[in-house]
Length: 570
Image (cartoon, rainbow, N blue to C red; front, side, top):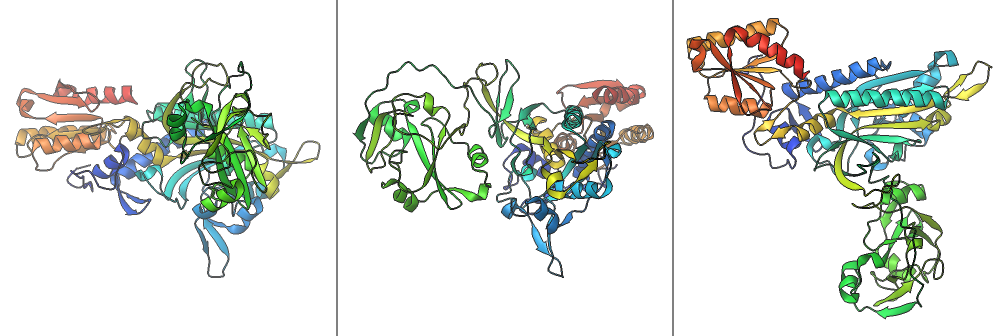
């Protein structure tokens, strides 16, 4: 392709809306343009990269025995009402009515649609197992679209679904997808961790996320270098110190005027924050919840939601009027002792192992010292509701946990019979008995994978594409297109590379060499062939985007050299 004919309107300035490298570079390198908040148009280079990633996904899914289909993006409400998810997705789901006032949605995911297909087409155990997949646009009305395609309202997703006769079969399908995902992300040039995860609105049993390590990742990951344990912040656990050597001291009320926060209490009482317990008052539907965690911890709302069995939009911190009603005190002095009315008390599992801690007295300007669980109060539920922190003990081996950030690019679930029960997807076994089909679900965000590749492969000049997903493998840059010899050699190399099936660009624009080099670096093309002054000596330069130095090569050797580099890098 000739760069003079390619729609590639690169930008010199950083777009004001872009905050992270992938968003900045996808706009600057003309991979995409914003149409609306969280909605993007993909330009020719962006489209080529998406197709490269999709092709890798297709090859590995097919290699794992999966079959590609294409489902409808417009889904009738009846299917999601059957599964009970019409309301579970809440405001994130794009809902609409047709001209006959029938309810539909734009598919945020496709469990119900695949299950509906299988319940109508599969009747016997002889037709199983099956793994079907599609690559299609999904729609979610994100509350706050951000970071470009990292969190957008329209995105391309590969979603696959496995159908088995039993749990042993599901384990085999799950492992096939696990291995396929590893091959996909390896081929995309990504460094990633596979972590235990929360299933969320998808439901199901086991759940693993493929997380690309990145400082801009939205999710925190806890992992252990010693045993390999890894989990995202919604799922991560830690061992609790079981050794209690302190004797219980008499409870004592302490005057703490206008001291409401843990930081203020630490300064006022001169005691470390791990000796405090904070009580957070929540409203969950029509119920009031008191959630207790150690003073130096953060509450994990996903864990709390799972305990309560409710959706994210059904949980919120209580306002001042509710806090005052159930505690009898101003905000900042809540505690579990003497709460008024029906309040569900949920205590983090670390608190029963603490001794002589401090918490709110449910009286304005007062806290209580030397409180002990069991003696002074009890909970309705004791469970893990905290976020782990760096240095916590690994739940498997006890070694210190590390915390990093990551971008979720893939997620695999063991759904079991959640959807087959709800929609009546059954098969007849060899004895003539009807049984529910056992399902799995496997997703990859295609756009997000592209962004994650850029996050891990860029420098101050631009993108550094791995060869496998680069929009073009080679860019030829004649330094001076007015120079007949340079122009002729560049064109000759261009023609030969095309005949060899190599994806090649030629920068035939009449611009300064510096501008061309800057664009080549910004676009991230892996191999640059520079045709300059030494062309009369039969020499051109080959430079890899990932390296600083260039190599002089004889014109007669350049095609073979390029072919070998591509073969090695692919």
